[in-house]
Structure formats: C-alpha cells, structure tokens
Image (cartoon, rainbow, N blue to C red):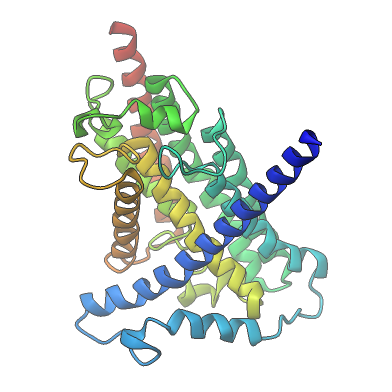
Length: 334
C-alpha cells in the first residue's frame, strides 16, 4: 500500500512539475516577446503595442489566440512526419533543461548530480530539431537555414564548452546546486570574480554570453532566420502552432541560457544584501540578462554569415582555449 501511495504521489509531483514548467516557458515566451516590442520602442522613441488591454499587456494573449486558430499547413513535397515532429524536438529539450535549473535552494524540479552535463545533452536535440524542420520543409530558403544552423552551432559550441570545462575545473562538480553553494557569501565569491582561479573569468563570462546568443539564434547571430536573405529561414513553411512552438522554444532557450549564466557565474540565488528571498534574487539576475539579450538585438546589426563564423573560429575559440590553459596552470600552482 505504501509503495502504491509513493508511486501515485511521485506521479502527481511529476505532473505538477511538467505543467508548471510548460506554463513558465509559455509565460516567458509571451511577455518576453512583449518586452521585445516595448523595449526597442522605448529605445527608438516610438510607441509599442498599447491597444490590447491596459498598456498593451494583453497583446501576447491575442497573439497566442491568433496562432492557435491558424491551420498548420504542410507544403506538397515535404516530409510530413519530420515537418510535424521538428517543433516538438525543439521545444521539448528547452522544457527538460528548465527541469534541471535550480531557481532557489528549494525550488527545482530535479537536483541531478550531472545537471550541467544534462543541459548540454538536451540542447543538442534543439539544434537537430531546427535542422530537420528546415530540411523537411522542401523549401530552398529553409534548406539553406538548416545548413547554417549546423555550421553556427559547431562554431559556437566549441568556445562555450571550453569555458564550461574551465569552470568545472574550478568548481570540481557538474552539480548546479553545488556550484551555487560555492558562491555563497559576498559578491566577490561569485565565479565571475574568482580571479585567483583565472584573471580571465570576466572574459569567460562574456564568451559564455556571446555563445549563448548564438546558440539561441538571437541577433546578430540569427543567421538561420535572416529575414532580409531567407524570408523566415528554417521556419518559412511553418504556420499556426508549428511556428508558435519554434517561437516559444526561442524564448525558453533564452531563459535557460540566462538562468545557466546566473547559476555558473553570478551566484545563483545568493546575494550579499539578503533583503529578498533567494528566488527573487535569481529572477532579478536572470531577467537583467534577458534584458541584455534584447538590448543586444536592437543595438548590433546582423553581419555576413562568414563574419560570424570567423568571430568564433579566429577569436572566441583561441580566447577560450587560453582561458582554459591559464586556469589549469593557476589551479596547479595553487
């Protein structure tokens, strides 16, 4: 009887976590997209959405209803199974990554010992889903975008992983809870300020943030979309909630990337002032980084695809490798 009760409670807990994470991802996609329109309007001294609801706050709801009422059309010649499966392959890894993120000392779906490794394992599926969506669309623009997403992912995955390897050498763990626990106390205990481990830690954070933008396909790294060149890139043939899932996945990946940056470099839920609960500090740091993501998009123009690849292969990878070697030497001498 007790085993049956445990099984039922575990199933209920799992269901609640899944529903909660999906709702969290959908909420962030809705209102970060509103910020995406409001913030540049503020930058450019113009109006953003303001008609639907007070101050335009219900505009994401209207957009969601519009997507739900549209039909998902499949172009003749497309691979129907892969075409319909690709959006699911893109959104599912983002939800799984959110399940591993510790938002506070007690709030997190699962405390996995290899949580950091799990996140990078899940993120590989996201790239595969985008590539298959473009390839299965039977559209020349989508096919070019599918090739671009693979080239871009390979280029920016390398410096990202080099930075992560150096950080794991410093913290000696893949457990995200333990990484945050090591940063407790004053703000100079945060990994971004652990200059005794490597004087290039602030630079490592910038490399991580840049690679996160590229992995999330955000401007100026949105080469798989590139409206002026490829119409809508890999998403050209998608309509209705097929496009909506890609849209939600983009913002869910932004939240995952900013949350991971908060955990790895900015002390997670810790704050030296202690004026608010840990969850509040985590959310403040995460949304400040989300604001920075939007800021970058509306501040830097999209350049040529080869220029973005050169940025990684000629600059970010050598810098990340130097940081890794310097970290290894300093840890050996410590």
